[in-house]
Image (cartoon, rainbow, N blue to C red):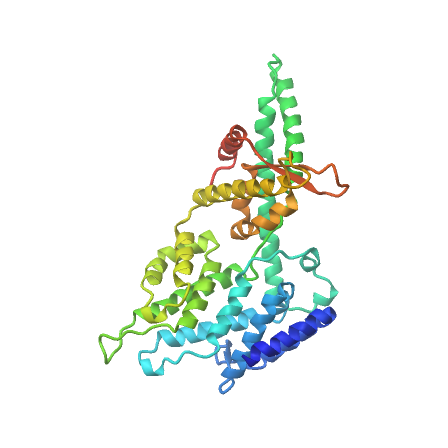
Length: 410
């Protein structure tokens, strides 16, 4: 309680003095790191007799990062994510090789550390100032968390842009082919189709080029390690007591809650979700001990199971339905105002309401949006604002067919 009160006071100071936010969080992170040391294997562990201090500072860091999401990159610049992950992995390894229930004391810092990793697993859109490494960041280690995340985000952004271009090319070619005349000269006919294809593709590409990209602040390797740790800790409940046959180990509810939060964030990746299913993740969640349950555990387990069984086609269908539903609601809400006859909405309001789907999988969302909505420039503004409207059923069917033929599901 005292920790929460102090953090609330410090956050009020941050609101009053925005320029001091980074300094406060950097000092907090430095203090957090001072309670860690390297073991003989070169991994970070919590210093003995400092577990409670480490737990309190870790909890305070979680509160700060939830309130100030734009400062989460400071955690990467000090390599805190790697340090926390090594601490959790070290405890998981110790727990795996232990057989005495009396020696299995759950550390007080584990739930806060898991919540910190949960925050770093949440997708976020890095601004241009973060994507560009300036002189102040030049002293950061080349293999540090921050530079690795920047590199991975750039690769993911490139993949998203390539998908956008492929979708634009697919629709442009299909539309151009439909406009081909019955000219006898096949060569002239193809040249005309190619010109129209390029024109339509450029228009479509510019429409979806401004789609914000949300990616987690953990690398793929970190996410895989975190998934393995979660599964290992859930397997702990399957161990039998050596002296009392009917008694089994169980995970404390506060730690089980943090584990499920981390797991559901990690399972946003289809690759990791499939891997989790193959590793028996569904059975582990369904066998959660009664002593480990907490209020809301059913909804988190259901979400995790749903992400394990969703394939790309299913996820795209769900996104298409959600996009149509969201646009319909926004149009109805807009119809109560002065533009009652308008069937379009601003792309900004659409992104604000649909951002959870973008965070789920940007590439699949791009495919779902391309077959569900149409973007056009807003003539009422001089900026790059866009208007959005739903596609008719027949046009959706044509676009879906074109997308399936020229951009097959992977």
